[in-house]
Image (tube, rainbow, N blue to C red; front, side):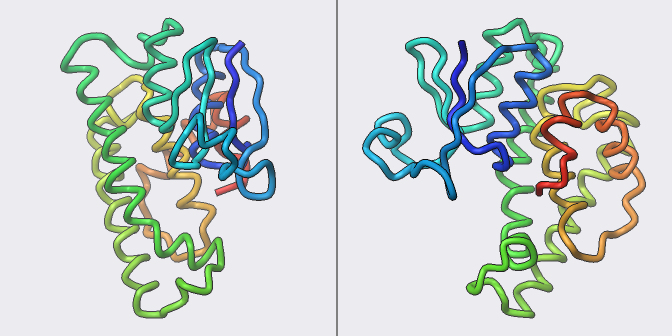
Length: 207
């Protein structure tokens, strides 16, 4: 059985859990990370030298890095419906997966650490205002894309890209800041909420 190492409140662990729900993959999860088993132990570092969750063990195969893990799961467990094999269709999914990891993640960093994590190192008012502006600007890119597709981020069908981006949208709405009126993002959020995997591991009030 697939073994998932990481606490359920982690946004990156939740990517893996939601993917397992979509693909009906049975798994066992163990709590690792802040507040649970330390990821700085030799035991964990032997699995992931970056000391980050999640890590999966699939038989004798170990893998870390959340977006890589969900790609692997889709490739291994009959996930072509989420991760198409046609090169151009798959490239669209990969484009948005990579955008979430690079652009969207980076844009929320300061505001999230300041407003949700209450980090003492992230309380500069000017930097916070800039962080909120950048996050809003990046979410505006998503809103424009959703206006074009009218459904999901890479097109008319739900795909693997919607898992990390859907969790990012949850984080956006759960962070206490002034949210621009992005109607397409709001409709997307409600559309995702019809999926059992998102109700279980996405829209659960934990940004």
